[in-house]
Length: 392
Image (cartoon, rainbow, N blue to C red; front, side, top):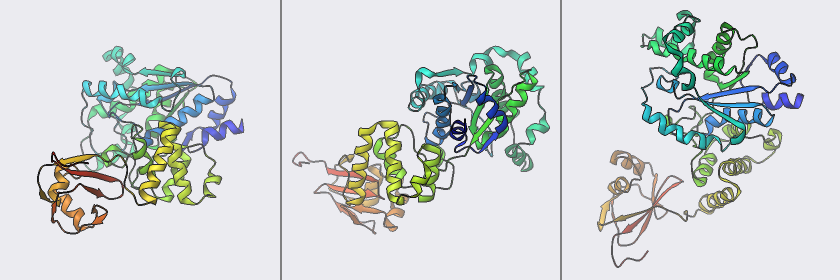
């Protein structure tokens, strides 16, 4: 039992309550373990996988796993951790995002042992009377006790009435499913605890255990992993990009990634040289999502580029018709950067290399021969003169 509890507790932030959890685990009952995710974006990333990995832990222990897709609640948007109202997402966007979710989540969970449910199943039927019954089970004061709502209220920032509905709808999901355990990020604590209360108000005596997981920082090591901050590692990233992004994180963040994304013994990791530990972390994560062969290739490619100072073998090409062009214009036209101002700034900072040589001036470059443009450590593009007589 101690081994089981240790696996469940590892990497968690809060468990409410631990005594109730122990009681459920020793009961011999096949527990209903719920995780809900709203399809508000098409990609899942390693930040999402922190909680999905914990779901997999319960799956390996033989419990009933429920992956709840909030196709109904996505129309509102979870206000947790938000400083302003979320933009409305369309039904078409939700449908597109749903298609990618199950494919990605089954890179971690076992498909045949996972129950995928959509919360529109009950919310499309609940009706006005059902909604009124639900909202009568909470108060405005209770909602304003939430840190994010309280902050917005005190700063005189608008709070849409519909946003008050979201935690209640998430709580009702637990009523509809009769969940024994609900998982969520640390910013979901209020919602999960409200689920316990609403279950009790609907007559469920053995209410759910709330388990929260830490928020995983992105590659910048500061902000939470998010597509909005461009610091995320997507589950659908290529093996090469995934490996490179993991190798770019700090040594301190690496140990947190080990704790939350793997089952590796942390004492073994801390005994390793940080560089070797990070390489092993990158290899393990790439193998998990792309297989052993791709992990080996990604490791070899990384070693080739960064250890041996070579360029990658599969660089994207851009053909140019002009005989010469200013470097900032080339960087913009080839898609390496989004604007000339950014290109000039990178050039001044020494962030641009042409054939492995740094250029500090926005000079005119001649294109009689092919060249390799490089930004930073991982971004390359091969520039090829557009000529019938030129051979690559």
